[in-house]
Image (cartoon, rainbow, N blue to C red; front, side, top):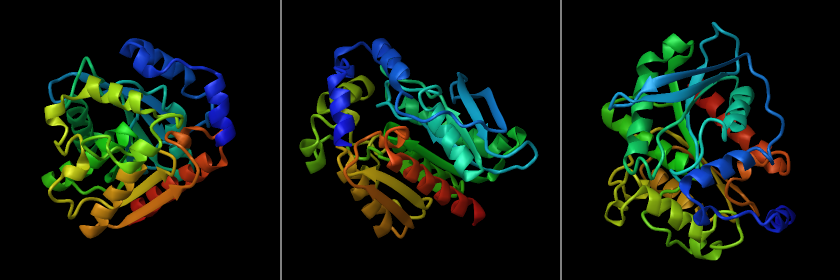
Length: 305
């Protein structure tokens, strides 16, 4: 990992916080799959759209690891990118990998981004998509009774909030897959200070993402910071994938502890010596594939129960 970080430093990529959101989105899109292996082929990949609560049509993509007619369990996947960047194309490889390795279906959502759409729009879009898949997923050829939610980074935050919302509306989820999620109101844990610079997700970028997405007065809202939720009992079982050298690692561990204290089954995997976003670096890091296998096994287990 150290050698990879040095190569990234030598590339002298312009930091996101020095760009406009539009420039950052394009830079992220161009670099998103540089360190990923070839995209696996799948029996079914279909683009469609689904409605947000306000009637906006949200782009989505179905990945199916089994032929039509099989009705596999389904994962609603919410991409990372600090609520400002990212989309279907930046996480296409990862979603393909999860579908291929699990043999299930993945529905990726292109939720609306800040600053054009500030908090809580991304949350509202994620919740609307989860409810829509639960009601209408059968029409896509998936088993909506075996529904999981997941995401990485900001998408992990959204997935955690989906699990709480699902509990509150009586919707059973089989799993919440949280990959390097953000869960705190402020970037003030020890790991945020320890890994503030030189570990891909720099403090200046975190501040830039947050400032574009949410006002300070809202940052203790549990829909932004799931650790602020009063009650986590009876939410879906969790698979949490963390990286040791990630500013977000402490809050990921803390969230796992909160879930366990609430009686929620938690499988937490901590990858030593790795950074934020490592799960999308399969061409350079064997551990990326290992983590994808962990996620796939968790999904297979959840869908079988």
